[in-house]
Length: 421
Ligand code: ATP
Ligand code: MG
Image (cartoon, rainbow, N blue to C red):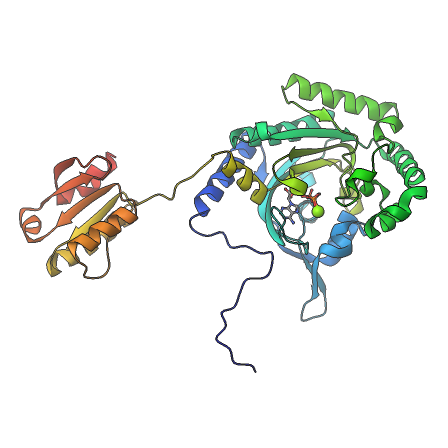
C-alpha cells in the first residue's frame, strides 16, 4: 500500500457541476421539463448501467461509440456491463421489458441524465456528459418527425439560443433507399479511401455513411453522392411531408444531405441543430427516425423517432447568449448582538427555514460588523438585528438591503412580513 496525502482527483473528462453553476443547470433543466410536458411527453428514468449487448445490438457494432468509446467492464459475477453512452437504447429496452406498447399506440417519453463515452476531452466534449432527449414510439407518420423537431426548436427558442443555431435536415429514406445510398457511397469513396483517416478506412466496409460525418476528413468529402438521389417514391413523399410540416410550423431549416448520423438504425428523417460557435463540437441536438430498432431489440415491430441534446453544450451556448440564473440569497439574515440574542436568532432562523423561508445566520459568535459583511456576501434580501433591547420589546427593524429602507416589525410577525416580499 502506498501512503500518500495527494488529494484524489476526478476522472479525466468528467466534471463536477459546482454550486455557482448549478442554478444555470437547474434553469436549463426546468425549461426542458416544461417544454417536454407541454408537448405531452412523460418522463422515464432508466438505468445508467446496462448489459453491454444492449448497445452492440442497438447503437451498432460498427459505430464509433461501440468500437471505441464505451466504458465496459465485467462485474463481480463476470457479466459484461456498460455505462450508458446514450439514452435511446435504455428507453427502448424498458419500453419492451415493461410492455409500454400495450398501454397506447403512441408512447411519448423523455429522459435526462449522465452519459459516458471514452472520447478525447475538449471544449464541449467530455467523458461524462448529460443529455436531455425524447422518443416517440409507435407511429411512422411524418407528423411525428415534425413534432420532435419542433419540440427541439421550441426548447432552443426558450433558452434564447435558437438564433445561434441552424437546423439541418436530411433523409436516408426507407431500407431500400438506404441500401442504394450506402452502395453509392462505397463506390464513390473506394478509390479515394487510401487518403482518408484510419477510422474512415474501416468505415468504408462497416459503416460507410459515417464517412460523411468524419471530423478528420471533413474537407475531403465534397462531391459525395447525396442520399436525396436514392429515395424511392414512399421515402420521397415522407420527406416532402416533413419539410412541408416544418415550414407550416414556422421551423426554419436547411437541407443538408451530408447529415447521416452515426447509428445503424436511422432511416428517413435525420437532423442536427448546429452552432458555429462550438467548433467541431457544434452539434447541440440531433436525432432521427429509427423504425427498425424496437424489433431489433426483441420487441414488436414499432417505428420510433427521437432526439438527444447535450446539456453541457446547451448551457455553454445559453451562457454566452447572456442567459443567467442567480444563486438565490437568503430572504433574511438575522444578526445577533450578545449571547441571548444569538440563541434567539438561531431559534428564529430555524423556524423560518422550516416554514420555507430561507433565513441565514452566522453560526459563530462574530462581531456585528463581520455578521453584516457575511449577510452582504450571501446577498440577503433583508437584514434584521437582534440585541437585548429587541428581545425585550419583541420588535426589530427589517432592512431592505437593495435601498437601505427599514420598517419596524414585531418579531412574532417575521414570517408574515417576509412573505409580503
Ligand atoms: P459528435 O458528432 O459531436 O461526436 P454525436 O453524433 O456522437 O456527436 P449524439 O450521439 O447524437 O452525438 O449525441 C447527441 C448530443 O449529445 C450531441 O449533439 C452533443 O450535444 C451531445 N454529446 C455527444 N457526445 C458528447 C460528449 N462526448 N460530450 C458532451 N456532449 C456530447
Ligand atoms: Mg460522437
